[in-house]
Image (tube, rainbow, N blue to C red; front, top):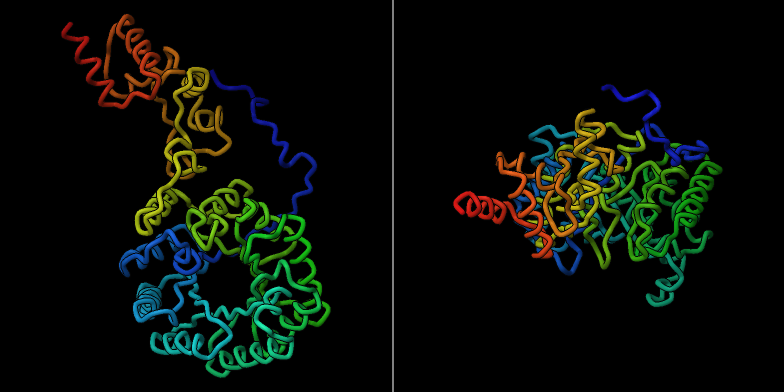
Length: 411
């Protein structure tokens, strides 16, 4: 029986039509720079980094921070090899490298860019908040001088530059105006607003992007790219990213699994999923599990079982009510199976709905699970297996199910 036309879900997310999202957005992956600043990560082998960049390309991520070459000889060589691979394999992903507004940081990026003969954007950053200025004993003249030196060095050496202020979300408006305007006057084609300590709320992110967009426009700089770099100390990074997008940010930074300094960055995987569901991007995201699992292994940070979309339990249930509904939905096709008990269509992200047997299961779980395992048993054994799961008080593994059935077949 075909489902009636009015069975489609009603989407309250678009009820009043107020969400103002663009038709496209650019993404910058920070997994190999800010991501590796997490104190719990390890610096992975070069080959793993190259493979990850290829996966970023496969997912349609537009840009990647390929490292901080000033920090060590290994990092310099990793950045060099990454840039060479991007050129040799003709990848579309646009590389960038972080650097303080110091010649010692910027020159290695220039050297690598010239050696490989591809543009590598310098993400030149400087502290901007009042507390940082006080602790460092910096005044605005000093900050402007560093800004001028950094941007001029990049422009003179024909490398693109994105000017970044750290702790932008706690900086004075006048200070930001002076720093950013000086950078773009000298030739910076992009600026980055940074929620370095995860201070922002969505309202704050929206206000900051709106403010800087207005300042740039009022001074005749309408084509400057605005990036948003967020952290999740308050758990608001994804919401802040969407607020920044609504306010007019052109590129959003994130990292796989949200790895990064302290509580981490905007989770790139969750950002991709939501942009896809909002219709902002149409990327093929079936490689998302491979991307996140690879990062988890290479930096030695496990994926929580309840992590959205790619966690082990994201599309798995052992609850009777849920399982029964999913099984009934199967007759109407994958669309119904994907959405009857999930807001995220598993099939769009390389996943499937999984039904297991546990203490909260019903007979539907048992019957379906055994069918998927190719096992046929009597109703009596079905009930015995269900009772066993309830007495055990936890999920049954496939091996335990097989052993249970094999034992009963010989009793």
